[in-house]
Length: 157
Image (tube, rainbow, N blue to C red; front, side):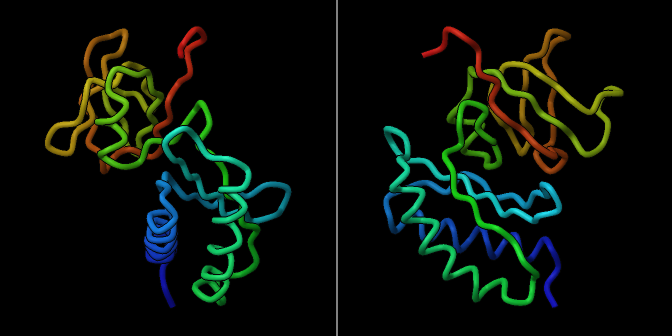
């Protein structure tokens, strides 16, 4: 029996391979619980943004693959979506790509007596995200990041 972490790795690997084959980028995957339902949400992107047709294409193909991969994992609903304005940031390349943008980062263990940080992404060095906050720069080990999302600022293009 696989652990939840092993299952997520398999999901991410499968989704990433499929997206790559379709000329898209796999952004993130997460299990959520809403109204007593278990939801597997997959975020995809591509140059110029994803369309409903892109989401449908990935959902159909990935759904079939995951039905086999997750046959003993219980019922779930698959949702495939664009990352949106509050795009999740999970990979090191995300922090490099969105340097200069504002992000909200939640950590697993306290840093300076805080669990949530909001600031401008300065970059990532040696596995540490560098975030410029109103209190000054903070270095956050990538392994300590629980969630990270872009913060949309009105007036941005």
